[in-house]
Length: 261
Image 1 (cartoon, helix red, strand yellow):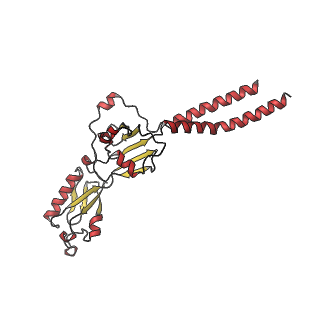
Image 2 (cartoon, rainbow, N blue to C red):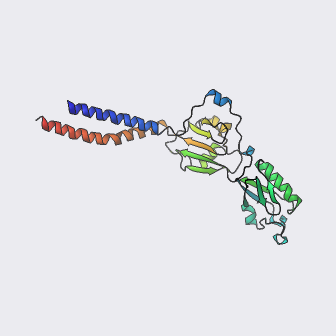
Image 3 (tube, rainbow, N blue to C red):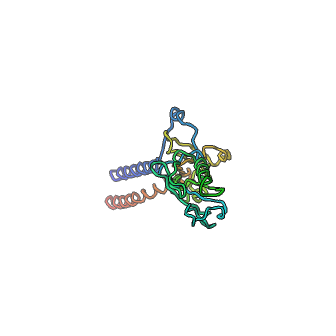
């Protein structure tokens, strides 16, 4: 009887360990939100309302015809004069004092401005000085979201346009895997004073116009496994852990048979 009791204990421990491993795999960034936490949230600001900060990287492109750019040889500006350069733009880092150094203008304050306000401000300054009828495009190249879980490509993705949606980011990351649970996608707004989590159901047609799917800087998107994938992984884990136990069981059974012949 003792070998049988030992075998039962072994199987019991294996089952407990398998259950624990299943639970640990699904606690990433879990959060329970109380009504009090929800009441403290304000309407989330999207990228169009984002205000420039020190260390942000700006891309400024003059999309006017290069003939309207002041000649470099005049020594006034260093704006690109070729069509290719005009399309690519130039990159500028906002300093700790909130200023950015622009050729022909010197250091100008941009911290605290929205993208559109900064573009308009810089256009006006260039219009008064070195450029004729400037038409600028300004992008904030340091804004990003992080996507994790059941997605083809995990990692950071830049937010280069206003009102980028969850569906657009999933498309840029290559789409969901076959194990993804599209009904419980988490968007964690980590850049807010009181971080919160929105649960999005992409299987619903209503999610297309859901304002919660408009992403913000430093959002974290977590895509969990669906129930079928979870069951399959749990079964696979249990099978993997049970194989040594089955070997022990067969060995014990052989020994028990030999001893009691």
